[in-house]
Image 1 (cartoon, rainbow, N blue to C red):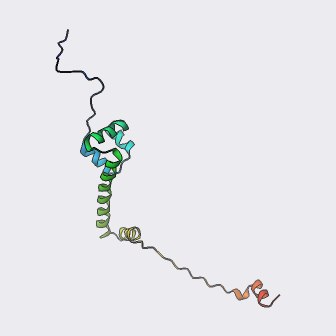
Image 2 (cartoon, one colour):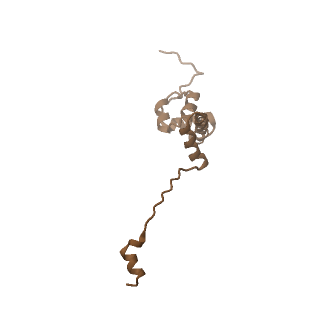
Image 3 (cartoon, one colour):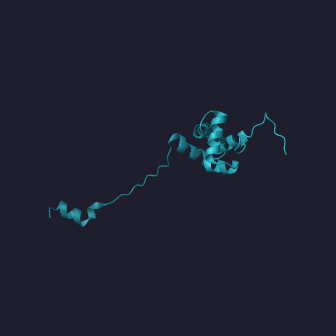
Length: 125
């Protein structure tokens, strides 16, 4: 018969899932979906949402919004640096950020004086 310790209670249920907080934040920065984050961290969506509330005192979507913004900032910085050496990236950023466009003007001259309908209208037929 096993000795029972009166100070230790069996609260039942599963032990709490422990996540690597830095990994979670990096996954958000990479803009992984909630399903992808759950798959990588091997947990259920409810568990992840509960963990976010315990650690950050906010829901998953609020945390995701702020952490994924850091990822976009890093990507933008990388693109601007790449634009210094890549004409294609500079052109693309100009179009995206500055509203620049490629304009191609096509001029076509049509001589309508030879058109039989136009001649008939002019002659009053």
